Amino acid sequence: MKIHVGIVGYRGYSGAEAVRILSKHKHIEVFLMEHRQDAEHRPEPLGGQPVQRIACTVDAAVSNGIHAVLLATPPDVSIALTKDLLPKGIKVVDLSGAFRLKSAETFTRWYKEDHHAPELFADAVYGLPEFYRDAIVGKQLISNPGCYPTAANLAIRPLVAAGVVDPSKGIICDAKSGVSGAGRKPTLKTMFSEVAENFNVYSVLNHRHVPEIFMNSGIAQDEISFTAHLLPIHRGILETIYFRTKGNPDANRILEVYQAAYANEPFVRLYEPGKLPDIQSAVRTNFCDIGFQLDAASGRLVVVSVIDNLVKGAAGQAIQNLNLISGFAETEGLL
Image 1 (tube, helix red, strand yellow):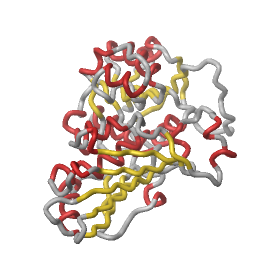
Image 2 (cartoon, one colour):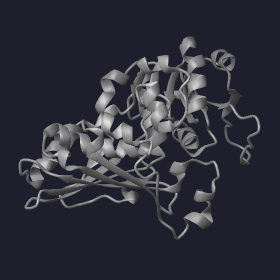
Image 3 (cartoon, helix red, strand yellow):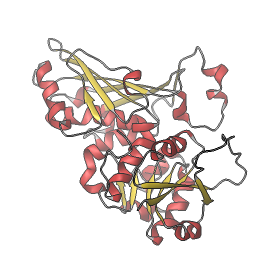
Image 4 (cartoon, helix red, strand yellow):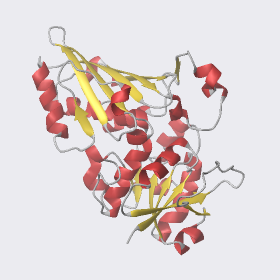
């Protein structure tokens, strides 16, 4: 017996990726929940099994036996829908930033808009399974992490926890993403003629993903400098993260720290010292690939963390969380 899962925002890049991945899931039947009546349908080829479409209402969700809903929607839409779905016993995995920052005040500071369901922060679990798996299992509301913080937190937190880097000397995260990270809504900045053969920086010193990094990496806000850049490619994130080490660790010690943290993690892949991943190593997968280069003499450590922003950075991780709250194998549909 398959469970029914609704996807809201299925026309966006992350939502469409969720539909693609779940089409291979053995235990899930997908329902597309339409919340925009003015949206155009993409042309579809004849034949095949069309995915069911239902209205984006609580009544439609209940009458179709929807077990859980993935919200690939802006924060304001996610907040409104979550308030209606949870009381009906429908689980929610939210891909927006609506519930990531633990309080309405922090949300307003970084997202520049009011939060209209502050009472739900107490129920939301930050959905980074490598850190919070036990807290995620069986819960009703999962706040899927941002793409940049996923790559950053997986690289930073083990080193900080092991005491092999000195955050007080500053951590610099130089992050680069493909254009799909900006979403499907057209803007001047993401037009082909603006992006092609170009490279630029944006949201300097005030990117809304920054608090997700210091809240989950064990560092203070003033110990991280994060800068986002827009690559002229469709998908993929590569973050180059600079540390100063503490206690004179050698390369084997750094590798041991990562191995201890991720020995049993199915979606984190490590590289031997001096070998570094590139975007093509992780694109279209749910993996986070981590490599590093250490200059032991100067104490400089450079870590490279790579993900696909639409998979491990969005839809894939959402399905990882969906599996955990639904009692399925965590890797189902993703490997």
